[in-house]
Image (cartoon, rainbow, N blue to C red):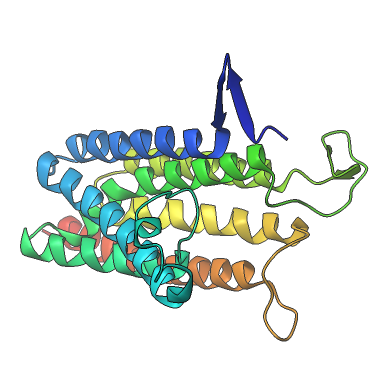
Length: 251
C-alpha cells in the first residue's frame, strides 16, 4: 500500500494526512448541509466540532487511563505524539454524548440536525476507509478477481474500496431523500440504512474483522442493528406522512 508520502526530505504518513483533510471536508459538509436545510449554521457547525473534539480528547484520555503504567513516567507522552493510542469505542460514545447535550442546550431540532450531520459523518467514514486502504492495517479475504489488490503477496478483496463505495452510495441516497420532500429525519435514516447495508456486505470479505466469542463479525452485528432500526423509524415516518397527506386531502 502507500503508508507514507515522500516529498523531498519530508515523509508524511498518508493516514494522518487523510484524517486531517477528511475532518475538514466532513465539517464543511455539515456546514453546507445546515445552510441547505435552513438551520442555524454556526450552532450546527459548533455541534459537530464539539462532538469531534470531545470524542478525540475522550478517546485519548481513556486510552491513557487504561495504560497508565506506560505514561506515569512520561507525562509528555499523554499529549505527544498523538499518532496512536485512542480508545475508539469510548471516544465515539463521548463525542455523541457531547454533541447531544450541546444540541439540547442550543435547542436545535433533533431530526433536522441529524439530517445536517449525516453527510459530514459519511465523509468522515469514507476518510477512515481511505486511510485504512492507504496504510494497510485492514485487509480482505483472498480472492482472484479482476479488481483484487495485492497485499502481503496475496490477491485480496479491496474491502476498503467496498466501504468507500457504501459511503458514496449513502451520500447519494441522502441527496435523493432530501429531494423527495421536506420530512425531517428521512435523509439521515435513508443514508444510515444504505451505509449500514453496504458495510454489512463489505465486512463479510474482511479477513481481520473483530469477532465475538461465537465467531460472528462485530461490525456486521452493529451494521445489521443500525439497518433494522433505520428501517423501523423510516416506516414510522412514512406512516406519519401518509396520515398528514390524508388529513390535508380531507380538508
